[in-house]
Length: 181
Image (cartoon, rainbow, N blue to C red; front, side, top):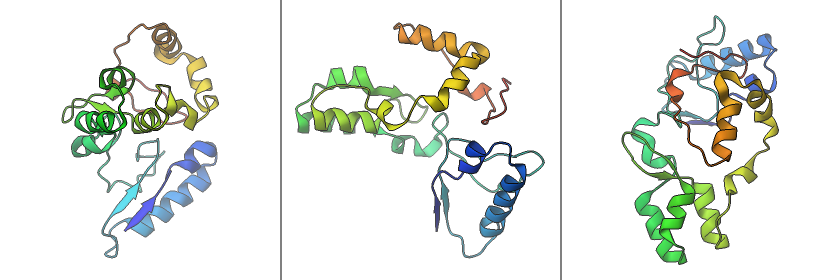
C-alpha cells in the first residue's frame, strides 16, 4: 500500500519544469502501474490526476475530489449526525454550528461539515473561520486577481453576504491552464 501526500507538489511548485514533471510521472507510473505488489495507492493533492501535456502515465486511478467524492462523500468531513453528537458532547449550539460550517452538499450525503472548523469550535467554544488559519491566501491571490470568469467579482459578492451558484464540474483546470467547458 502506498500513501503519497501532495502528489502534485512538483506541478504546483515548478510549473515550468516539464522535464522534472515528466521524470516524476514516469517514476510514479513505473512504481504503481500494473505492479503486482501494489494493492492500494492513495494519493492526495489539489490537482486532478490527469494527462499532463502528452503524458498520460497515471491513467489507472479512480479519482475522487471535493466536487465529486462519490462513495467517499461521508468521509470528506463530518456528517450532520456526527456534528449533532459533537455539539451535545461539547455543549455547543447545533443550529449555530450548522450556520457556520455546513459547507458541502453531495448527491450521496446532503450535509457535510468542515472538520477543521467544527473541531476548532468544539475545542475553543467559539465560532471562527478556523480553516483559513491552515494556509495563506497568497497562493490564491494571483488567481483571484485574474478575475477569470468573474471569480474576483463572485468572491467580493460572497464576502458581502451575497450568494453565487457555481458548477465546478464545468472546469478542467490545473495551476497553469484555465478552461471552461
